[in-house]
Length: 292
Image (cartoon, rainbow, N blue to C red; front, side, top):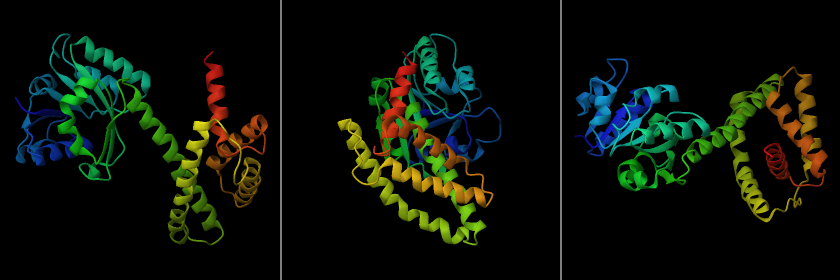
């Protein structure tokens, strides 16, 4: 028996395996495509001939494969996971996590879903963030081996989908920021302001973003969206001018246009004097209304 098994030797699976080995853990590895385990075997990992053998070799197995269908296909027959735990880093939504938990539990095992908010090169560092959800017992049993993978590690709760929701929410927040930065940089370049000059200046905005998020959290807690600084109407007027300028230079600013639609909709519903965070309240109100 080894301490942990890792299935899937892509960049992330390999990084996780190297960290386990560096921590003195015994590791069994498996990869669908042969030839990716040689370096890890040289470091001390044991290679299993097939997935079920890797799962049988350890009390806990980490899955770093692509897609839930693939993950289900790697699980052995019903009853074969008795006494075994699965830590799943497959990317997917809440419904996929719930369905996968049923597959694991149906085979006698326990499931921890994990979301990796870091790059493979960050595994084991203070900057890495990994959120888990699912079986509290599995978390308590394996937290000692899992926590060193990331400086920012927590267990969000027993509802297995929470980690997936956290991951999707984080992507929904950060990805538009990246796309908006590219739109803004392209606009600057169209007027002769190089991206090399403009992009570093965007970092100056992050303290303002942090202040906004802190204030928004307080407003949400109080359910009070009265504007204390700039009103949503003031934001809207400014951004409409920016969007017009970008269009004049031929920049297809779709992220900015989507933001404008959200702002206009909230202005219509909550009023132009509301705080920017009122967008949250209106979106949540409409979501709840649509669900009955």
